[in-house]
Length: 329
Image 1 (cartoon, rainbow, N blue to C red):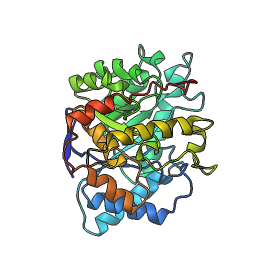
Image 2: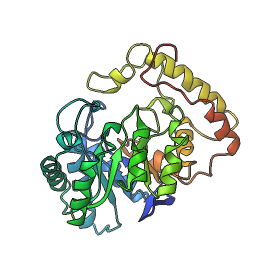
Image 3: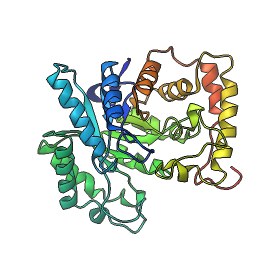
Image 4: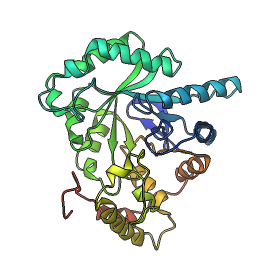
């Protein structure tokens, strides 16, 4: 495992982190024993960054993480592990609409209560990183929630403060970075979604903001394992994500990417992760890990040689301005 600086912060962060959404649910049936084994294996392989959220199984993911970290302490494994979690906005539109007020969706009372729940589920007296689980540019002129979080940080309940970007307006967090409100940004960046390379990633580098990349596999499509006939269980959110003709169009584009790899010694998942790690602003990438085999495969990518510039340039052509899956794109 290779390690990187987390923005300007004193954290030696593993290039491959553990994305803990799937172990909480929403990706089909998941056995807790498989989740526990996967997390132990990833940590044994040098992963030291875990990303979770309140919404991942209503705390199920956080409780599994707490259990594993407790087991490791009992076993005498005292390596530092950094756990990032997220607080969603209070009930309302997702994503927030332009008329919402930040102090309503992220009130101080709500934030304090939710943070206390995160601490309880993670069995900790301090959160390493608390991220607001989405944002809207409508709040940039009055980022009241971050003022509250900075106060809570001073009280010692939070280490670092971050934000997870809204999927279709990721650049809305640029003002937060330049204003010094966030220590980290979690964003979508992959072979299809390359817009962050236009400005967001450069600003993060300039401001010393840690970058956590999610959806590196485009919810699984960039692993190359789907076909046009793939069916997802009803309890798997991808049944909606790839609804209609979306899966067919996606598989066609994945096949075109696979053709680019013929002269290179990369599998599709390896190429997807190495593409993300090729950007110097990226601190860590957090692929979802559900079992030991995935832990081994994903963590192993870190030690592969850097992606050749010729392949990087070829993959730039596969930027897909998909937005809301408009017809014909």
